[in-house]
Image (cartoon, rainbow, N blue to C red):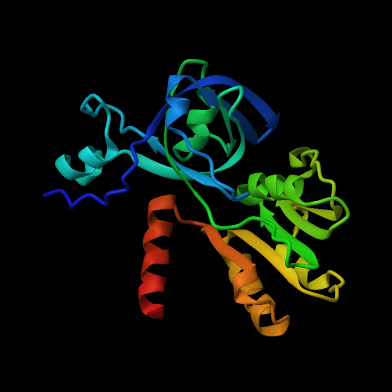
Length: 270
């Protein structure tokens, strides 16, 4: 018997791929739009994210498509798979939503889909959600993450006012995966390379710590996120309300398994 659906109150936006771009060997940009873009309402967050829905191959879905109806009437193994992706940009005038996908070969769902996406392909998204944007209370900003957090870090750097101090520490596979980043802030950007042993937590610890109030955004692989959570809260005294920190993924876990593990951790903490 299917579980009762979780009512979101908003249907999925049914978009179409307009064009694609290979930003780096492992990062693919998808620009989507079409009539369904009218269903997408942006928010004020630079870590705005959508849930991209992937239909299970071979499964017939009711039309018009309604993910809540699917969850209410179909067995769980037929529910569309969902993956979270940061809104890299949204242009209401052009009617375009931009998402960047990491692609590491044939494994997974979202990366292979992005690698083969063609103009006209369907893209189903729920959201956006989000919780972080650079605030005016902070004297300086810390942004740290890996490829999975790069779109949000890039959007945050673009949103920072001119001259505001910022440090960004970003882990990618190698130099070929670095991207040009645009900002008016007084930003120091440190690129780390996984291929040569780059370590986000160690690099953040080695940063010169500025005086004043810091707002921090730390997202990516759960291992370094957990280490930096302790460092920033316990050793540096970063205020909890000025810390956005979350493990997007964990080595050796697919998305479903990682979500279950996180849910179990949250239950134990209560």
